[in-house]
Length: 444
Image 1 (cartoon, rainbow, N blue to C red):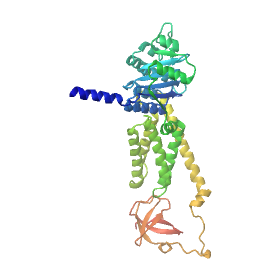
Image 2 (cartoon, one colour):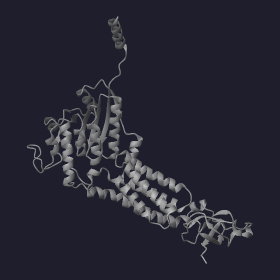
Image 3 (cartoon, helix red, strand yellow):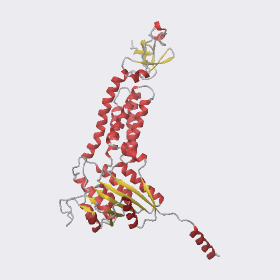
Image 4 (cartoon, rainbow, N blue to C red):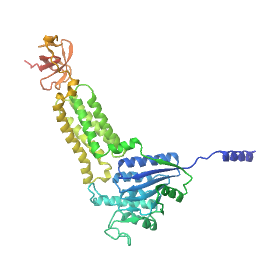
């Protein structure tokens, strides 16, 4: 009976349609930065979840940020999915590291790979510490994927001598022919048409029958690439600071604080997604905000907690702009300080401009009633005119605005500019419409 059942299962199984194997294709082109790292990481996660046959990365890049390249390298190198670097036509600097992290490399005719020395923001050679670090990353990557570690080192360090290819003092850059000859690449393709090139890659690795899925950046990943740009990051910080400044200046919670939190949320969220920031920086930021709020509403005199709070906020923003801590150099610090300082300058200039010009603007006049209430035009006296000279207490701290209690009535008041703590005895000295001015009652 059992052989009959087995045969029946086999027959039924043969009659069922089989799912075609999937191959995911993703392009890595242009400058390597945090947004590209987030894209590749997502592609590898999707490939692992779908159990695809292979992931092909079509690479054409002059290089880019080292920390982003290392994130991409780790996502590819430590995945169980088969990966193929299709160099079309160049993989320079960070692109060389990414290519070496894949299981297979295939190149078009006239392609290049190499010249992977680290440089600063101005294009100058990085410090020996960074060069040594990147050289060992290239070496370790080549060793894990079964390629020549010495060739990988020569791409980074000009002191490595490769006879016939890169004499001492010259960085190694391999052409397609040289890469195939030296075992860095598996094969070269001669097709000229772009679609034919891809077909040639699929044929070489016996993937023609697979279901091809082209991966592209999502709108969110594209947005992250823009939001992490240094200049846009400066703008987000500026708007965030301005929003919080105006929120502190006005009672209650309004549009200023909402816009400020949204902008700072976009700043931290985008940097978090590309691994420039982590939750520790966000925690430091909110501790700084909490210290400033405590200082404003619960501590007499400004500065005891506000100054360390401001320092924590600046620290969190700086760390978020720095990226990976193991790669810090003076040039990286310079690059992180630039948008931060730019944000401070913009915040200060815009705050002064807005505070001076807003009361005279048309927008402000639409929001604030500035007409004069004359008795001849039928207006009645101010609602609190009967309280002129009345004594009471400060229901809240007056900084200088706040709330006071007079004859059991709770009303909004303001001092002449001084700071008064809660429960301070005060007297009403002036009433202008609904604006009530108070002064502290001195002890006799």
